[in-house]
Length: 298
Ligand code: R5P
Image (cartoon, rainbow, N blue to C red; front, side, top):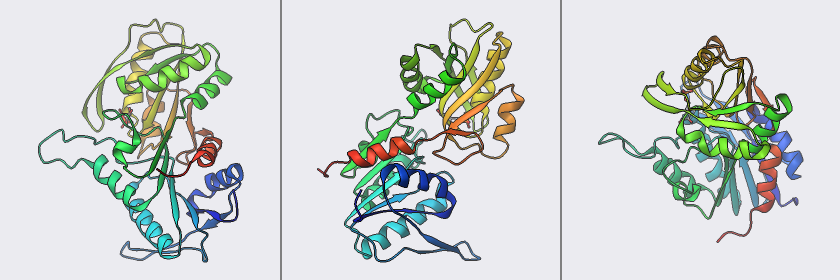
């Protein structure tokens, strides 16, 4: 990439920014951030800015970060950025995609339009899109690219265990399970899940023999960890030899890691869309390829 571009990042994402800058051949510049005692944020962008700006911001713990993204994008435009790309490896607020009860905010549409007004292009990994088929339906900006980490996770799982049985903990994981299974010919199956509350899920195992198998639960997100924990308990009761988990977005809120290990999970493997102790698969090359392939806007 030429000197007419820069990758802006926040200091808490330095590691991923360095990897992406290296892979995409983009110079890096840090956005300085000050948080006032009342929680307000002041940002300072590097000046001068080139005409093409890429902003890296993963949106776990999203409420503050959406304000950061707003301040950074508007300031970058003020400073002359003509083409603004958001690389958001984890894109929040995609799960509430319909009003399940009258009066509920449809966050996916609201946050999607908010980002579309700020950016010319948005790139993300495994967003939680289940009732729509393209990211652009949620984020109607000129270019909205969805990448998947499932093949990378599949490669990693294969490097650890060639005869793993891949299990998706709910119907929505089917897309990632099939992509990963295709890659290495893993046996696979998908559970059915009923959610009764943030930390209360019921899981039904698929009709696949698990006795004596090394099972890997593969999913997009671990948040409270209860989905993985419940699936793990059932798999171990059904005679699975080991249960490991491989996930794209390691949100792991509160005591989630403990919840998952207490259920009997052996290893947790994740990508670095969100920096976490379990991160062992880098999505930087995938993001860099997408940046290089961003064609001219429609
Ligand atoms: C939802 O359908 C996702 O694919 C995950 O299964 C879910 O977000 C996990 O949430 P938690 O870890 O809180 O059970």
